[in-house]
Image 1 (tube, rainbow, N blue to C red):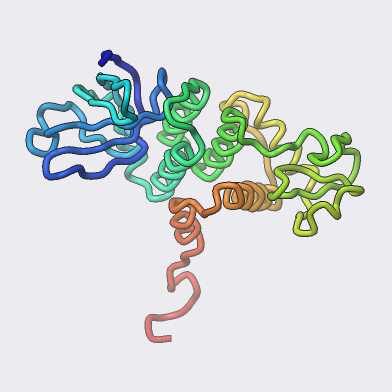
Image 2: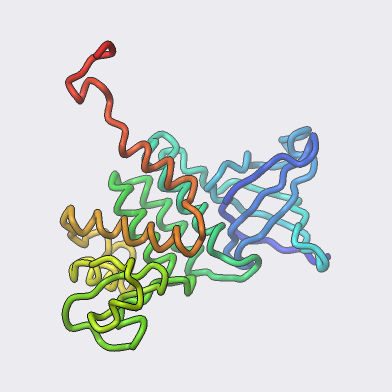
Length: 262
């Protein structure tokens, strides 16, 4: 076994037997990595981190040759993002980020762009109240960096440049020109402004994208397009997205002008 040290974000964790944990990390140098922390529940002082989801840590691990589960011998917290954890909307956004990384990224395939994007997004959540916009930017850039992105530069079917109306096909993974509409009868129309916003976000730095103006129609369409694409190709809806949708749809009764007895 060889020993390595790297930065890591916690994607998720679960109990292993009575005293240990198995943790999925996303690391700067090795991509997605699974590790076992033996005895952490019996002697938590052995590790300087409680390994909360989406926390940023330094880990030391022994890389096994014939196993995808490696032995983590040290884990030191760098940032627990406590400010994010105080806001339910920010927790939802951070949880969606880690769940999306876990769903899309292959095991032990280094992608430093994805790691830096996730870390930048989490740090931005600490100081920026617009968690919805941060989530949208993260989804678009994450799909671009991972090679999983939809095709928005031209028609996904014939390759023609877009000059007029277009539709978005989740099944085919991109835009359809008017002549190719019959290729997917379930394709949905899409605003030019939505396409322009996606291309802008793909090509520009995270900070610059935070200043991008989007009207409510484009914001809503971006959400629908991105979620329908992910749901189709992942063959499921992300659990954290379901929770976010429930939170966003919940309106306290007193805001509706009702009462507990009405």
